[in-house]
Length: 257
Image (cartoon, rainbow, N blue to C red):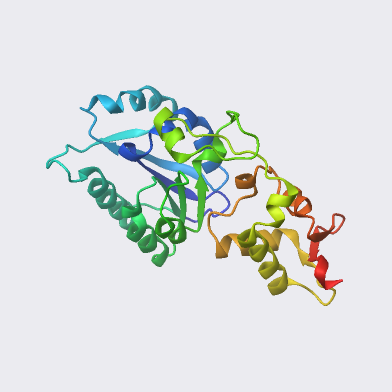
């Protein structure tokens, strides 16, 4: 790893064939990546002779993204994936990087993400909600690209379907879940309660920041924005199941009272 860990050096590797929805939120994508470190390497892989990638060409200069050409040598075979993986392994062994950002919803990159982590590198994934669980689990943190969009959706209590978003080539925004919906989300409630139980003091309280970290370790795609809440504390409060000590930034399960 590099000497300056205060601003980790990251390589951003984009699968152009699998991320058309990202084109419209490219600014938000790099803003999100900046939370994790400096995007020192920025590369995107695809067959740039194909017309379907023309929209990508329009946004590459703005973010200094280097296009890597890979011809589709055999019909039906994804040569782009292979090119990205080979390039990524070269960077792993030759570049002074602290982590990698994989921008794709393709499960073919699962083993690559695992290999990065085996080498002590942080792995951040960015993809649509249709991304297979295998790739999500292989990343330290996985961010659904839908939550980076600022565009409103028509139905207030539903997520726009993956099919609709894909058809429009634009990610749909996420609506805010109601308190009832949050309380009935067994996976979410279980994640929160397990984290509090693991970190709580004698009074049953756990520090809010540590609870959030613990949840991400157990489910890399956890993000309060997936439920329509900008802040973790707002999400916790809205469930109605937990007691917040805002002064000390602590929370505990109301069942422990």
